Length: 226
Image (cartoon, rainbow, N blue to C red; front, side, top):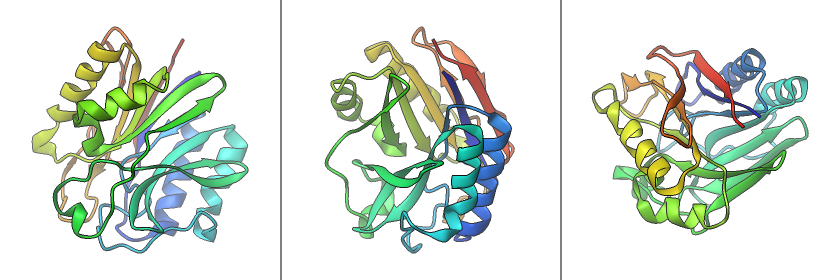
């Protein structure tokens, strides 16, 4: 399966613009599965409005997924005040996962989800995570217990904390022996993050970096997993 991680340019709170940027990444990557960062459709704006699954602003992304045969994992606030992973295909949008472990000021607005999320993609079992989830051993354990081949996460780290996703990914690989894909914002994302880390990457079950993006917005990388 061709797996990609993308760090599209972000205009805070402009869902229409961001959905088009996601669509551009999907068309460029031509991957079966494309992982995007935390709150990728709104930017990291904790008071941003919810994004319903039938939001017409998501149509360009749905269309791109239809053209490329892609399942895109995008981030957005959803009803019930959750930070969510949206699963986007050519058939539409569904809520795939609600972030279980909230960080920093997130708990002032959002509620934690209570259930690990796993998607079946052409026989590959893909476990879902959002940012702080990746640093909580209990999250990886409960997700891996569902039987996964890939642990896919949308994250946000500042440039000064660029090493954090690597440390977490290697710990997850060492413990559970799965592929790990982390899509990290790059550039400015809103919410006070003027310089996000980028460096989105995919790690093999042997803890080798199979693909890594740089630090610029708009980059993506992909690899074949087997």
